[in-house]
Image (cartoon, rainbow, N blue to C red; front, side, top):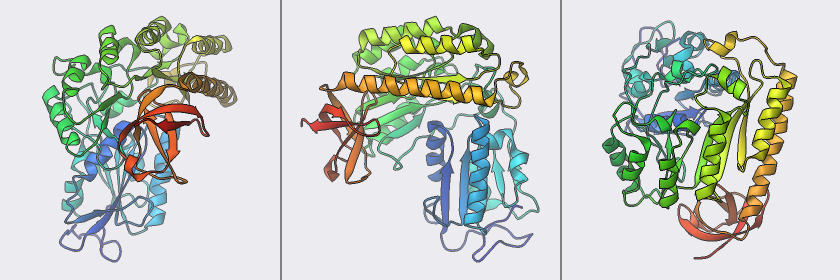
Length: 452
């Protein structure tokens, strides 16, 4: 039911949502990718501080806003679990569900007892107005409009939640891979003017942030809606004073140009860390997936990076158990990855998504076989990461230290995405310091000594 939160319980039907009383506690919970996290941070800033008090999601609140993901079946399941958790945690709270899952399955969510408001991918940015203005109705209110090529781009960046800031530079995707629901959930590729992102970067710098992670759905596609390109954007962003590091979140291999790699090599502000989706090392499977490259292109991009940046961190996404993937196809992927000088793998088991071409494909792989293939690649990832850490022992690096203290230690990341650990010193928090990597620690971290 759609119920505005009252002072001492849910209001009766026919009541309106009156904000002329004490501050209401609002909590935000984000599922999925860095892009969702970025947008949640922006949405949270739309709530007037004179009317709302932000609290952690683990605390009791008057309002819970759940920003959802729908990239896999497991993501859908986690969304439902989160919704039910917060309903149980605060039975009288107002529950709003927004984002990708809300865009794709709005009525599935609205049928969950206790959900009050469901907003799609565009409507979620106006949630403060939806909550303040609507009246109580019998059923959950749903606003999840059809997407089109003309969907707006809503600039977003995170501030205050973590040491670094995440900034959205692009949204949507035109690729329509056979397994993916992202174009259905977020629409076509679009981006703002470069000047808009430069202004946002200046605003972030004024907050004292040292590193920005550039994020989006397909950031290498930046410029399609404005006649620019990703390299031109980077050339302007690095001119902003105060921001010392830019990290690229993920970029398709076919969009990772020689010009871009050479620019990263030639500018110390752009970190030598690449996350490149591969998905399969078998060209036959890549073709079934509808990917826009073959494995030779991927290998060439890795070779080009290592030529200019021998210690660059390189990660890759891989999907196992795609329909029709034979044992020989998987071994081809494994052998291909084993031979590449990559740093780590993000391994996903294929998840059938309604509305995608892959959902209708034959040759389904058993759960047991998918799990076995996943374990094998995860083990390979551990071996490659350990090898990469050993390669970096004795090297010097610049580390941005985090703001959190755990077991009297402080952690941070090098430019090439090695996590380091050092005895806690509050003066290090949020600052970049030069260190020497001295050895491997626990949990895939490295110990360091300060050099300045």
